[in-house]
Length: 127
Image 1 (tube, helix red, strand yellow):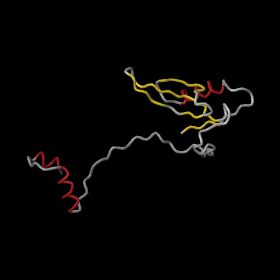
Image 2: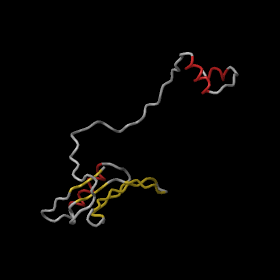
Image 3: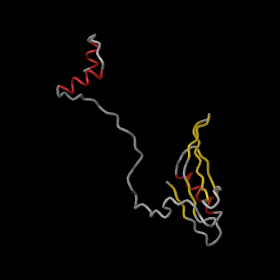
C-alpha cells in the first residue's frame, strides 16, 4: 500500500500506513524472509551434566573443557578448538582451521587423547 501511495506521488510514512491499515482491520500481505537455522533436531539424548558448573579439578587429566572460537583476521576467519585442563588451566591440545566442522573438533580430541597415560579417563565438557 505504501509503495502504491508513493508511486502516486503521495508522501506518507510507511509506519503511518501500517498503523492506519491495522486500525481498519487490514492485514498487509508480505513475504517474511525465512531465517536460516542449522539446527536439525536432536540425534540422541543429551548426556548427563557431570560438571554442574564446577570447573575445578583436584588432579591433572580429570576434567577438560573445550569450545570453538572464531577469530577474524585480514585473510578471513580462523577457528581455534582447544582442550583446556581444569587442573592448571593449561591447554592439552588444539587445532586451527578455516571451518568450524567436525574434522576440527575430532582432530583436537585425537591430539588430546594421545597425551593420556593408561588408566586416565577425563571428563570432557563442551557447550
